[in-house]
Length: 102
Image 1 (cartoon, rainbow, N blue to C red):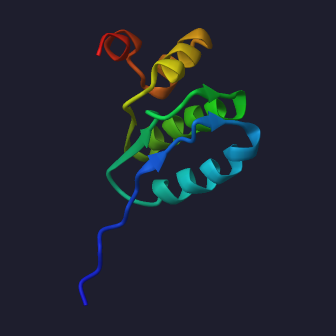
Image 2 (image 1 turned 60 degrees about the horizontal axis):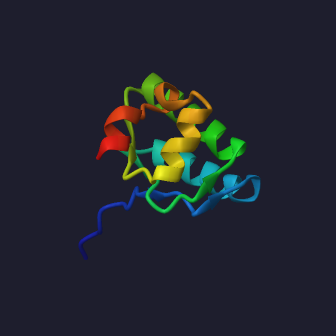
Image 3 (image 1 turned 180 degrees about the vertical axis):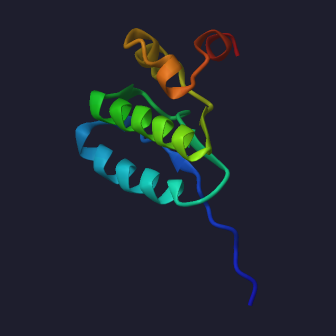
């Protein structure tokens, strides 16, 4: 029986709140156990709170320390706006200019 590759995709919920942060924390920890790129899809985000942003910053720091790549993929305009307003784009590896124009 052939095993399927691990699905490491992390998709942020439309509303990233303190309540949803615990599930995200668990998924980020599990994803960090694998080699390669840790990709977080932020395409469906309509609002993102402080707890989720803290987790993303921590995940990026941890990925960097472990020599892993960390990427925010498909960021929604709401996600980009919130991250930029908080001054966290560099901390999570988000290129605001590129992502706003694309």
